Amino acid sequence: MVRAPCCEKMGLKKGPWTVEEDQILITYISRHGHGNWRALPKQAGLLRCGKSCRLRWTNYLRPDIKRGNFSRQEEETIIMLHEMLGNRWSAIAARLPGRTDNEIKNVWHTHLKKRLYKQNQTNPAAEHYAMDIAKSESNPTGESNSSKLEDQNYVHLSPQHSSSEFSSSTEFSDANADNHINENTNMDENIWSQAFSTEDFKTNEDYPAITTDPYFQVPSPMLSTTTYGSTVEYTDFWYKLLMEAGELL
DNA sequence: AACTAACCCAACCGCCTCGTC
DNA sequence: CGACGAGGCGGTTGGGTTAGT
Image 1 (tube, rainbow, N blue to C red):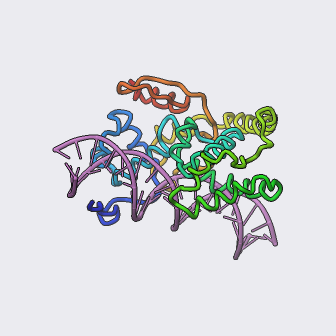
Image 2 (image 1 turned 90 degrees about the horizontal axis):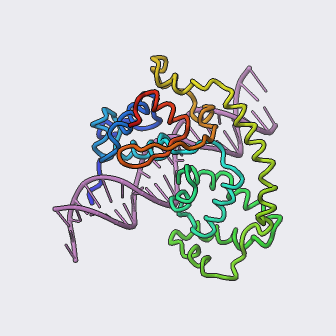
Image 3 (image 1 turned 135 degrees about the vertical axis):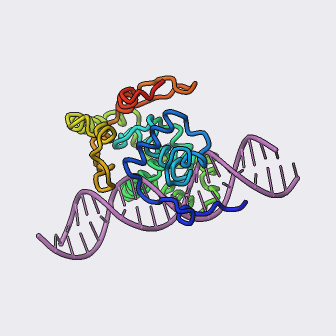
């Protein structure tokens, strides 16, 4: 297969997305659906390659994405699924509604792997698993992962997490998470819609820092609507935003 | 206050899979 | 059946942010 020319050579833009580009992409997809990704940027008037648009949409702009910190329960689910599936991030993401493979991959590499390593220091029973992780990461064929499924004597990670212990152990962090959410929801709720509806954000410098944007720290309940023949779930934020913009059919 | 190290995550790259012709 | 194109996936990285000195 002939490789498509890279974005730069085609005169297409790379790097972080601006709020204007996001807005164009959201508006276009909410009106027309994404259709052919390669054709989308041209039709939408974006100087990006289709791949970049798809990634931006699926990893960040999609309305059904649940932003914010992972709950303890989600983290444990990831650990369990990783134990079963290995580095199949999309398969893991499919079992965690609202989370993207990229997000899960990041969490795994930045938090969970380290946590497991620390646990292994104090819990020799989990040593097997740590060794398997190391093996699976040095063996891209995933052989060790599939063997894990078959090995009935496989030492499971974190045996200390029985379901009852699990719920009690989540109480603390969840309570904290709630506080966090309440704090954030008290912040200016119009920050993002303002960004979309005013002329204030003209340059990249004006773009609110994504990772600290309070809106994205709020895991919102999902609302659903029917768009282009299929039911789509929106966080209340996106639902409101799109309703205001008259984009929902 | 200034500097450095560590952390985090969005975005990119390149390969793979699948559908179509 | 093979070639091709498009989308999907996992690994990696660049750069911004935060913590530590």
